[in-house]
Image 1: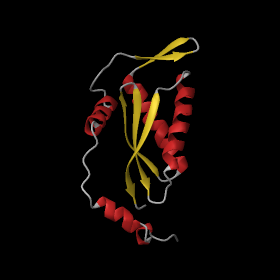
Image 2 (image 1 turned 90 degrees about the horizontal axis):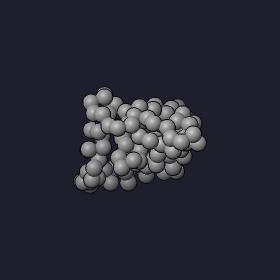
Image 3 (image 1 turned 180 degrees about the horizontal axis):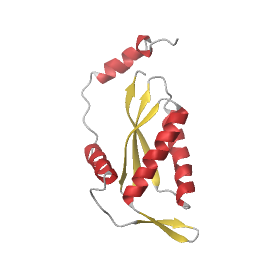
Image 4 (image 1 turned 30 degrees about the horizontal axis):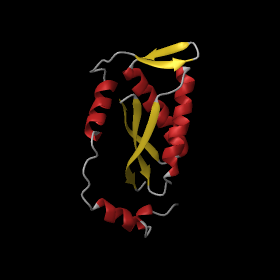
Length: 141
């Protein structure tokens, strides 16, 4: 049976940081609401034109966000301790918000970004849009 990570002395550093008020990053609320609205089909946008060997691939924003969320969730499970909170397309780049289990290294976000880019390119048959992975929270288990 593993030890409770909240008993780890380093967890005090997380508690200290968590007690500080942190302003909401600019655009975060809009990204999350846009992601939810897009996933539910509440807004429509023109299809995105992604460059490919045959010219271009067209995909709807909703399909791209849903595909990205599904693939990111699979990759996060494989990495262990990485959970997807939201995905949105903003300024032609995918914004992926994640929470990580305490003890998961920061490099997991970069690994997720790299694997997600490769997985999306494989699904789309073209280069994936830029992907930014943001760690927005840490959880104990």
